Image 1 (tube, rainbow, N blue to C red):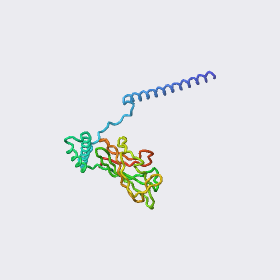
Image 2 (image 1 turned 60 degrees about the vertical axis):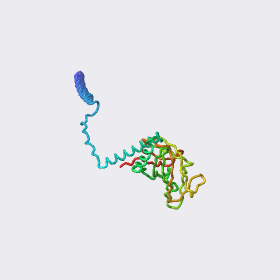
Image 3 (image 1 turned 135 degrees about the vertical axis):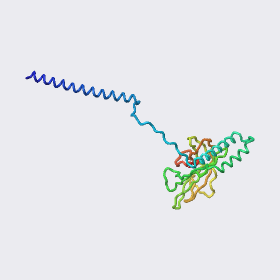
Image 4 (image 1 turned 90 degrees about the vertical axis):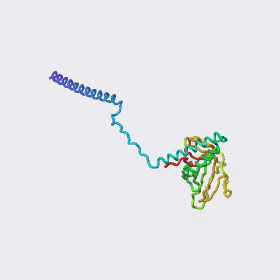
Amino acid sequence: MANGQLVLLTVSEVSMVHRNIQLVTTCCLLLSAFYVSAAQTGGRVPQKPNVAAPPKTRGPDDNWWAAQRNIEAAIAQLEKYLQESPNSKHAPAARQQLAALRSLSLTQSQPEWVTMRALALPDVPVWRVSGVEQPSDRTRVMIEVKCGRNDGGDCNLRPFDKFPLVLIDSDGELYPMLEACALPGDLRFARDGQVLFSSGRTLNLTVDFAPLRAAATGGQIQYRDANEAQPAKFSLVRKP
């Protein structure tokens, strides 16, 4: 009986070995088929062929906006020409053309009020860029600063002549401040040198920076040192 049991046990083990061999063989075949498929598809799951998107239809105003961009390009070219050849024989005509194109251009800022401190406290004014001019030797930025509080209190402003601004264009290039206009004569000053102006009042200030590159499409204004104000952004090209 012991030998019989030993023979039955050995047969069971042999049967189990056969089943394991079949299982391993099946896995190997499946893996082989997978690698062949992966090699044929570059290791990616086969996808449907890309279908070309239908061509974008042009809107009725596309040609008009293209003309506006051409006007902006002509202004930039004339400004560059006058910078390089201010006394050439064509300079007078170029100045006349430049003035005419500027009067037709849609170049303007897109003003948005933002706070001048990280914390929007009641005495913190808001500011925005209301206009940008580009004479040959500088970039003139018109800035509005408003005291938005309605409780009769004052707002505090760091004057730009003592706390200079900096302009950063659309490509991240910095332009130093050249000059800030004089403040209105009826303003009051705090002990720390900040300007005090009453609630509801808006100050219209002008600040000059170094000339912008012709390729610049916009930028932002912020304090040069210890900046806490949100940047006042502007765009030089108005888009539809």
